[in-house]
Image (cartoon, rainbow, N blue to C red; front, side, top):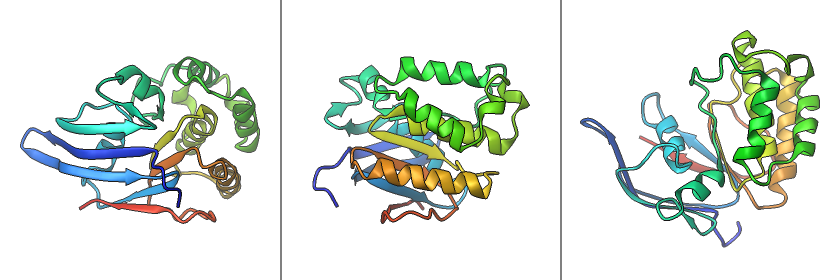
Length: 207
């Protein structure tokens, strides 16, 4: 395992009303894969939002590749890919329009990687469709293509493989291994599905 972490978390605390999900939670996350495990309702999605700067923590410190979430908030968010799969804001947006927006949000976005992912995940017939027209599996494939193209240090995915066909999973696993060879990214994934990769994942167990 590389000695230099990509994401450090120091004494993160967060709670909804009286529900204290995290209290002084700390972690050091290295390049590779980090899998978040835990029962429903334990805070997996909330943790992903916190780690990517999409949800403000009550207290604590977050740092991605030397960029502090409080001191450099906008820059920090650009270091972490996140799409809220439960959000309704995408319903009327076309898939190709969504992909175009990635160029604005992620400075190292790769058009070449996107095209490769669109081809490998069989998304070409869906590019001009609005999100409300897509099946669960196709939506997830759009998120995966975006994640493979963002080229930022932290990629956070929430239950990303629901409804994904076997060939698409095989493509994604191979593409992910190629990304991980460079050791410049960590993929933080909340999933119940076992990933077939050569990389030994870090496990983040929530209770």
